[in-house]
Length: 158
Image 1 (cartoon, rainbow, N blue to C red):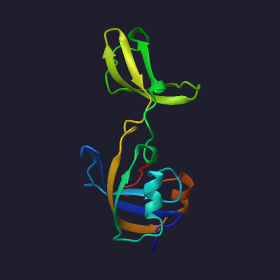
Image 2 (tube, rainbow, N blue to C red; image 1 turned 30 degrees about the vertical axis):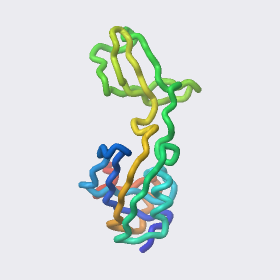
Image 3 (cartoon, rainbow, N blue to C red; image 1 turned 45 degrees about the vertical axis):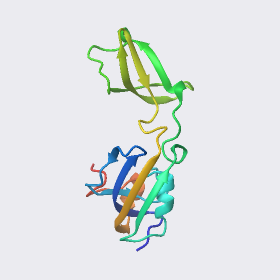
């Protein structure tokens, strides 16, 4: 079976940044629902379209083709007094972005009485080197299609 819309695909996926830092080791297989469900970087999904079990690829993605460029307007400094006790670097919280939409912010630094938050994706601004091997391709179930993701081994668990 070839990879096409509404197929469940299992990959061995290794991702590093341009400096060779491992982001995803590829030790555990990853499953996703193919066909524009937002479960995989769009350019990677495009490269897998029409392929079958055993297919291997190596792909270099510029930031604009991966998680976008960093946007400095998504960094905010908030007084520490506005946070509950125990706020820590690496913590995440929901807030409003510059356009008023809900965003997830990560605490990136605590400097005295100031907390610095960043709503950029952690991989924004990074060039990614991806190697992948297709391990399995099957028709997705109606439930998986309805939920927009793969269930079971290497997929989403409910």
